[in-house]
Amino acid sequence: MVFPDGFIWGAATASYQIEGAAREDGRGPSIWDTFSRTPGRVTDGHTGDVACDHYHRYREDVGLMAGLGLAVYRFSTAWPRVVPDGSGPVNPRGLDFYDKLVDELLGAGITPYVTLYHWDLPQNLEDRGGWANRDTAYRFGDYAQAVQRRLGDRVRTWTTLNEPWVSAFLGYCSGVHAPGRRSEADAFKATHHLLLAHGLAAQALTGELALTLNLAPVVTPAQALDPSAPISDADREAVNRIDALLNRQFIDPALRGAYPPEVLEIAARHGGLDHIRDGDLEIIHQPIDLLGINYYNPCVVESAPGTPAHEAYPGSEGIGFASLDVPSTAMGWPIIPSGLSSLLVRLSQDYPEVGLIVTENGAAFDDVVVGDRVPDADRVAYLDGHLRAAHAAIEAGADLRGYLVWSLLDNFEWAEGYHLRFGIVRVDYGTQRRLLKDSALWYRGVIQRNGID
Ligand code: FCB
Image (cartoon, rainbow, N blue to C red; front, side, top):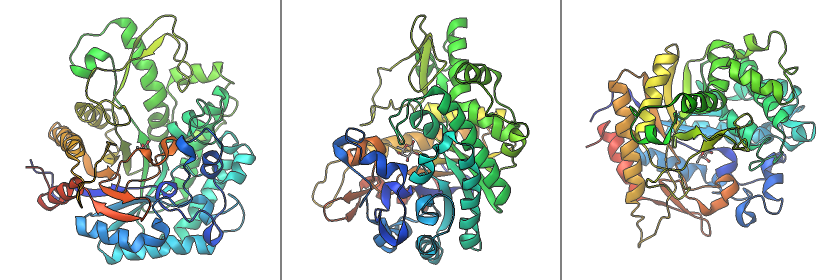
C-alpha cells in the first residue's frame, strides 16, 4: 500500500505539553499554568513546569526526528513566551528559542510547521476576559505578526489555531480545560473570537496557511459499525445538530463565511448574537491552503428525548452521546479507523477548495518497558489501521496531502497530566531519557517505504 509521491510524513507536539522551562527567559504565565496549579483540575496536580524539558533538549529531540526520517515537524509557539503579558512588548528571548529550533530542524532537513495557538493563552489576557473578550482576537493578530517577523524568512507553513472547539467548549463551557469556566454564552463568544483571531492572523501572515480542527464524523451507534445502516428521522436530526456544533460551526465560517443556521439559533438562545459584528465573517473567511484534521474517533449520538444538554454541547437537549462496544484506547476512545476515511472523503466532497492534512492522529496505551524496548503493538495496530483508512480515502478521491502522528513524545496530556502516553517515543520523566517505542521503529519503516506492507 503506497502513498502518493510527495506525501508528507511527520509528527506533532504542542508547546505547553513538552517544553517545560515555564519560568525561563521571560516567559509569562498562561492559563494552563494557573489551571494546572488549581487543586483538582489536573490528575495528581501535574503541571507543565518541566514536562519533557524540550526547551533544553530540543537538539536531542530534533536528532530523534531526523533518525525517524520525518519530513515535517509540527510544533506550537507559546504566546506567553513571545508576548509575556499577551499584549504589549515582545520578548526577544522567547523568540530566540523558536529561532534556534527552526534552524536545528532545517539543518536536519525537517520542515517546520508552526501552530500559533495550541491552548496556552497568556493569563493576563484571561484576566481581561480571555477568549470571551473580543480584544483577545486582535492581540492574537499582533502576536502572529511578531512570530512571522522573526521566523517568516524560514517558516513557510503556518497554522493559526489548534482545535478552537476544544478551547471554547472545554475551556469556557464544560470547564474541564483551562481556564475552567462554565458559561454557555461565553463559549459561543469564545468561538467567535477564536475564529476572528484566525481571520486576523491569516490576513497578516504570508506563506502556506492552515487551520487545524478537531473534526469527527457524527454517526449513530449503528452507523459507527456500518456506515450504510438505516437512520431514523429523529436520529438524523440529532446527527445534524451535533455535526453543526462540532464541525460546521468552525469549517463553515472559515471556508464559506457563514455560520450554520442551526448554530446561530442555538447561540441566540445562549447569550444572544451581539458579539457577531458586521464584517466579522468577511475577516474570518480568508483563503487558506490546508485544513488540518485532528482525528481520534467518531462522535456517536442518537435521539434520546428528555435528555438534558451535554455540558460541552449547549443546544444538545434530547440527544444521547453513546458509547460503543468496541476496543478502545487508554483514553477510553473507541478505535474506529473507518471514521477517518469517511471524514476525509466527506470533507473533500463538501469543501473541495482546500487541501487536507491529518495534523494529529494517534493513541494512548498503557505502555510497558521491557529492557530497552517498548513493545507497543497496540499503538502500531492503531496507526496501521488509520493509515490504511487514510489511504482508502485517497483512493476514493480525498485530497489528503500528509499525515502527522500525535505525538512524537509522551507528554503532558492536559487534564490527565502525564498518566496518558501518546508518544511514539517514550519519555522517562524522572531521567528525561527518551526511548524509541516499537511504534517509532515501525513508523520509520513506513516513511522509508512511503507506505505500509
Ligand atoms: C488533541 C490535542 C492534543 C492532544 C491530543 C490527544 O485534542 O490537540 O494536544 O492532547 O488531543
